[in-house]
Image (cartoon, rainbow, N blue to C red; front, top):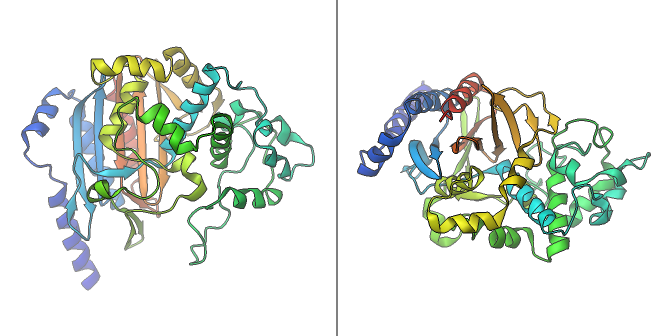
Length: 396
């Protein structure tokens, strides 16, 4: 009875917190949103309630400008801090798109070929258990398209014991585990999602440029795109008041994962932290519409439009259904919807779930992010319905 009473009180508190403040800016943005935006936000709330989500945000970006915003619940349940436009989320595997863009930058600058063997820069991969010697045939293109045959998890231990680190903390740990891993299929023959594959791509970036991955991304993506509140690792002191906590729901139990955690060596595949406005600037770049004229020339210097279109071209079928994508290209996933190619990526780590869907031809994208994961799978039907509604709202 006490648990039921506490749960009821928590639900009431979350419903109150989910109501957006009557700010003039909020109303002005709502007036520019398309008619379907209200259907998206309704589906957003339905999923959040079904999955026990503590807080989340949704943003609609058209021609580089935010034309729809929605906030739900709390960024910090214990502190009673509501989600705001400044709330900083963890974007998990959406980070992989940054690594992919960096690789294509180096390709366009003539510093590598997508068909180069990865062992040219990461010779340690030859230590993977591979009687046929196929590891030497893995190319950069295969890592980008998740068709290398490498395993999906970076860390093979996940029983939740106190001695287990969240992720490997050093490159040496990955190398030490390589003789005890194996290729799961012939490289290039089919799809198999691989997190460590993107750590190996980051290793290529670092070997070629001499910069740590985060330094390269800061200099070559975040700074030129004006994404000045994006970071990896521990939250800087001046942003700590805006950092959301992550949460996990297991049955009737809600666990606060905390504001910060150590992604260790996996930062290049899942380390990005940022508010939705920074991610909206990134979507503006992807869809070809910078948020202000001064940024246009900077965008052109980050990556050519023709290269982005190359990255979105389907290379391998995934067999996945919504809210995931049916195919993958070079770092970006995609699907067909009414004759349009919808591109993007999803993420799930440390309690956070994130989704980006964009129609580059129409110059429009939607960003969905939640600070809670339900380990029991509650709300999955509602999430698929939300994804379908979001994609429908991308029509120009």
